[in-house]
Amino acid sequence: MSTKKKINRKINRKRKDTLKKIALSILYIGVIILISAGSYFLYPVLFPKPLFISPISNAFSISTVTQSDPGIESLKSLLKEKRIDFTKISTSDSSYTVNLKEGSDVIFSKQSDLRSQLSSLQFILSRLTMEGKQFSRLDLRFDKPVIILRK
Image (cartoon, rainbow, N blue to C red; front, side, top):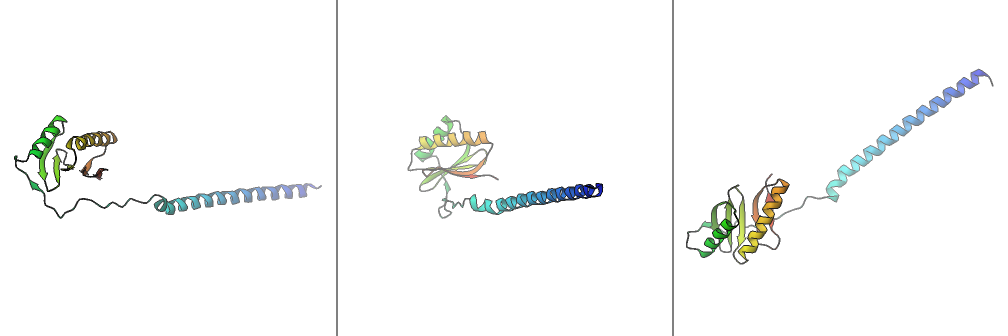
């Protein structure tokens, strides 16, 4: 073979290698773009935001209670016993609302055991403190507490 043919073959190989590298680069970039776009559009479908409907009605009025209610007195003594600082206790027909010193509200049911609700409150407060989160409202009237976190 002549040297001219050898040189042409080397040049053609280099061109083919360069074209292969460019094609692979374009393919990799295309795959990355497809994966990114797919995850961007599929994320809301696979992990939707939960839709919460607040169980707290604005229909009832909460009034501040005088010292005569025995439930308020027992709730106050239990809160002091559990070392939970509060500023005010209000009541409605079926619940007590306790304003904590941090500015949060906790709603207790009058029909359920106050001790078990306070135990739940202590557990939730400790968990949220460990996670570094704060809540604006905690409703303990239901089987599963409803927590509204601060943003």
